[in-house]
Length: 428
Image 1 (cartoon, rainbow, N blue to C red):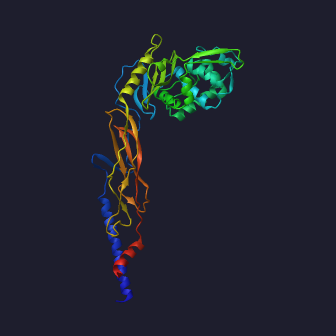
Image 2: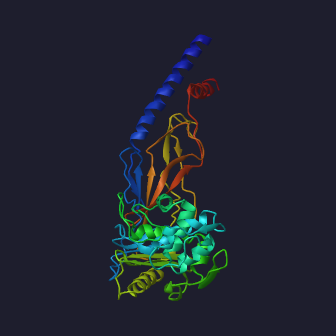
Image 3: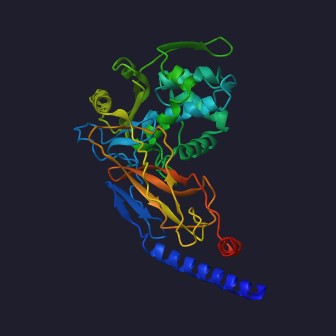
């Protein structure tokens, strides 16, 4: 047989092999349709029409408490998840609980050792006040104890004017910080929480936003140290006036593990409170707005204890990670076959890397996982590349997601591979 005839036969065989592989690949894809279920787990194909619902981080399993507060939230401080809420997303005046935001801004400003001077405006703020006069000078650090232990309104204004150059300038910093923390419906006008309104809106926040601000504050050790101090004495910088402050957060002595808190009251806001408790590596925050008016001063303590006790009694950490060892293999189109035979399909094994994922939850709350995987992959595929994700849900609430990767890769088949394959079998 001449070399010309050998080459023609070899070339024809190579073309037939390529055509056969392409036909087989098309058939294989048609049979790999998703979604489907395996061992009770759900798999869905990734695509433009796929929708995962449940973005909110609010539990739906908490009981209906008979609370005094018109607005209340119980929050897991570690995750920011709302475990219980009663009108928790309604904007309301929040009185002196505003001062936790004023305090954290002052602490983070780096100006605690600076000297601040009382203006005429600051010195005329209504009670509760330190009793300063215009021109009195104080260290910002000392004013923070006045602010958080006694809730002095004049101290708040001196801090605001020193750090923000004016009350309005400081309010802009407050609103900016609130947004950075994640607050969605808060608007601050004053640094002390006195009732106020302007062309933009009413000074206030929501119970959920207030809890988020406290969540941020208790991560700062200086904030914790100040707000947990039983009493504190200081003087004006010239030494002519001396002051003594006592902590009025009675909740610090009501429950083991009490971390911090701030009370508040105005005519519009009613009694308000935000506080945190940490016990056995669990940290809970309670925020209350409009929790009674005069003659109902103890309502806030009753509501706080009831919500904190519920959290401590019912929520424990649980590792919710599910390591799926047998995720369905994904066909890699136009890939060099693993078997070396052109008519065989190539499959890659998805991998969900094992890790620890702890969630504070009740025994009744159920976690399930939705695996989003493609119907097929197109070669080349690099080893370790992300091809999908595992989405975790607590009942209908989305918790988060983890990447699904492939350990092995797949090279793209080309004419040279087919030519080499046919050549080996034709000439050997």
